[in-house]
Image (cartoon, rainbow, N blue to C red; front, side, top):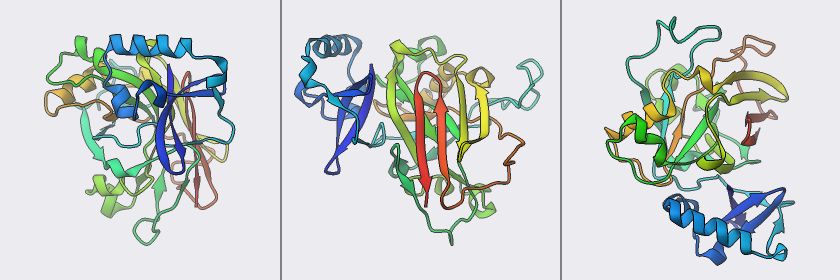
Length: 283
């Protein structure tokens, strides 16, 4: 299933998305995305069966619908640093691979939705970048799980834009603050459940005004999603609706170059094949 958070009069609700249409799930008793993520496999099967039984008139067009953050209220958002090998470097030759996943966080209040406009106080940070990341949405709670069992705890996948300050007083030692200003974590446009997406070998990238600044595949990850979930679950309890931003590829050398930061008027698009595009306009 493809699942979205929609906003009506500012209030979020959940819908199934298919072929440019949506089916609101309020009639199925689903209040929010975290509630949906907490459903067990059998309950999800029943939800799919309920969806299949709905008449065509129950579906609504997505035209003009405002999408909220795919997970509007994550309990926690974990991000993985240095998780992509540089271009051309094989796993066997990766001398800079960390000994264990590098974990940092983003405040839950930093989430944003597809099509949002992002503004921040330039007096606090002038140099801000966008980064594409495959987002992992946790389903069933995970505590001290083995890597071979970890993927059973995935609810689905989404696009995340890990917006980050590059100013030394934030990026140097205040990662949480430099990555957690309001809107610094666009998530969406929707979630693809794990039964419909294999995260291996997915191409992903980011562009500014249509010019690519990142382009790689998830095969370049240093730590797999299963390894990251297992590692995290031995230190914290992962709960339904928690987000993991699984790392970002290297910045392309050109034509914009790695020193080109976000500017007013920019349109940023992060994209992941088989999921979609997540767009943010910079104010």
